[in-house]
Length: 531
Image (tube, rainbow, N blue to C red; front, side, top):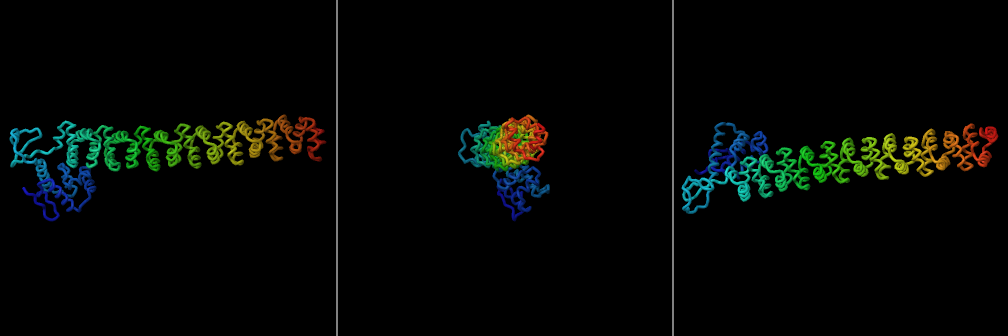
């Protein structure tokens, strides 16, 4: 029966007698109803008609399913039961015409079975010396041995192969795709509706599915992956080479990327995140649980780990760095900007903060500790070995260093000051409270105590010597130059001056006595009467 196109723009399903005619009339129907986009049609169908399938229906590349045609018609706005039935009949006529593919005419062979009898490749019909053979269908390919069916699909026209695989159930199609060349399987899936392709990719064993996905452009692959179960996506991405996995994860929505990467083995997750742009890597790691974020960041290079941690919120950065091994935490903090390093150290436990600060390079540790609040800096320093505190103090300004040392326990302050050069030790003592200065000087070796007191202004030297135990005060004054000893003794309370003078060697005592000013409380006459 000749096929007559409908007049004008209005569709006429009754004119359809072939697949091209069905596609043409469906296109007319869409145009008649305002030419809605295929995306709109897919949304109107409420899941019955994927977007790619809607587009294929108007191209006539392969015979669609009847339910797809009816979903298209109804999505366009057609609801008349008579028209729906007319479209069903249109599909049946197109299907009947498509199911028979002519083979080149040739004289019948003697072993050609009569019309209607069985043939190895299907039912044979003889019309006017032309033998009509049913085309390869999903049903026939499903019945073939899997390898033979895969080879047939590989050699078939792409659009025909796509149509047949779309008609098969996902498991059957997946078995045939799994043994194809991955590039061919990828080509067929890439031209299939996303939902159908995802179902078939899910049915392929993960390693083979990864090989197939590697041949699909990342952007297109990410149109399939959201349609797959999450665990299947994880298995497939796990099987991808790191470079391709990075490209695929880069194209995912952030939420999907976090879900997938969070379920990868931590080593592979670190490789994938390491390949992402730093901004994307920060967002992905920030979306993970803290424990997993620690494992992923710990698997990165220190430079990248610093970029990722530095891009996180301070609280998140503290949790991640605190979960690292101390050695890695030191390396990461040491590469941060001082301001960021201070934020991280402030959020750590005191013990970990001390361990990290202790491991920082000299230049970095001074800058970090100098920026910490005094109480935090003292807490960290008090947990460090004295030699490490000395390095800190020597790198700080005198005022900041004095505050730090003044906050240390007296025994530790004395150990630190005793390791400093005399001029620096005197600066530390000068910055201390008088009571602490006395305690610290009391704990210094005698020769250093003498040097420290020698470097103090007279008033502070007097206060320190006044607070020392008598024998300690005598040793200190005995080591001072005579003129300095005179300054100190002249400023001491009379009772203390008597104690000190009484303990000095006679020669020094006479020299100091001779230098004391007349008329003072500690004038020679007064001291002689007290001694």
